[in-house]
Image (cartoon, rainbow, N blue to C red; front, side):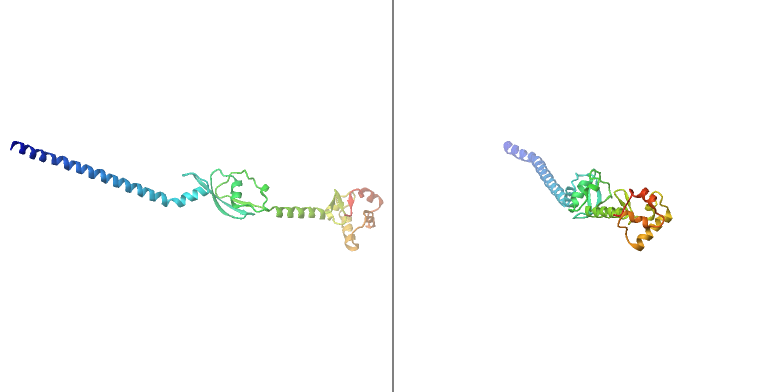
Amino acid sequence: MPYQFGVKSLKITQKPYLVLLLAAVIVIFGSGVYYAKSQDKSGVQLTSGGGAGSQASEVNTAPGEKTITVHVAGQVTKPGVYEFSQGTRINEAVNKAVPLPDADLHSLNLAEVLKDGQRIVVPSIIKDNTSLNTTQSNAGNTGASQGKVNINMASQQELETLPGIGPALAQRIISYREQKGSFKTIEEIQDVSGIGIKKFEAIQDLISVY
């Protein structure tokens, strides 16, 4: 009987420990499940942020880095609004918009740092050449030919730059060519009333008919 009593006593005293052990297992298991759920939830949030991440990678920006927005227009294949990281140069913005073959890149300061809200207009080299030709043509029409005054094209003000040619005489030269046509030689200017041999000798090296 004493032996049996001892066994029962041992079983009775072991029950609290079993309960504590079972409780510890439940706590550990529950903690593991909670940790797994929190990790899974964190993973979902990172995935949902993929759109912003792809946009950041497109403009080559690091996480948390500030971006600027610029507008690229003119002679480019893809005009529009672009985002870049701070410190980006105009060269990169133009390349992003893909310049056309006639883009005049030399007219831009490609090394300039972009500013937020900046508008970059890429001009056309063809337009510039046309303007240059027009300017040169207009310069020819003003009567200047190799530093000489073209008496067939010169304005009254330009004729008055010649020695001995005042407003009245300049107007006579213009009226003469309007009535009788262009001068074929510089000597014909002597047919204009008021221009004699001495006046012609004073201006003959300064005038031309083409």
